[in-house]
Image (tube, rainbow, N blue to C red; front, side):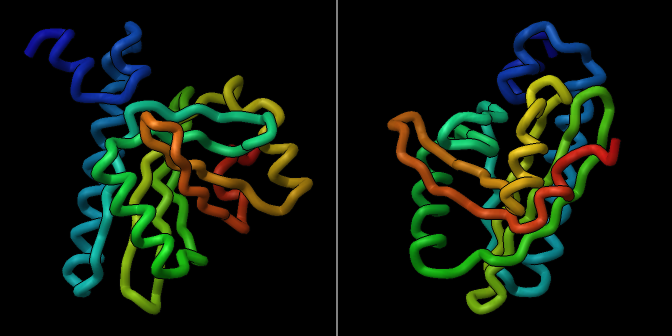
Length: 164
């Protein structure tokens, strides 16, 4: 496998000369997502695994995490959100210079789960933690290339940020 092949398998940051260790953490996160999805599927839940092409922490008008996903995943997410309620979530986080987090959103009524991996560093979320703490929530704005959005609300923002 060439370095170009490795870059194509990861998110946008992996193609920008990031260290192999960072790509390895991303690959581990995707493996964790697949294992988590498998657990839900074993319990007869429907699961949507999102595969971000880019994740950006934003503090402007649309603050939170901006997550670009493929069109087919976006359409399925939009259908699920329109039909149900994803009001429960878990966040599994690993910190290694960059924070790698797996957000699992659950709709207990329809037995559906959405798995969304995120990555961000302290500089990228500077100020975002303060906004989220003040507001008591944080958002994940999932979008497609056409700039259509599905916004997910997380009522426990402290789960997303390092303890320090």
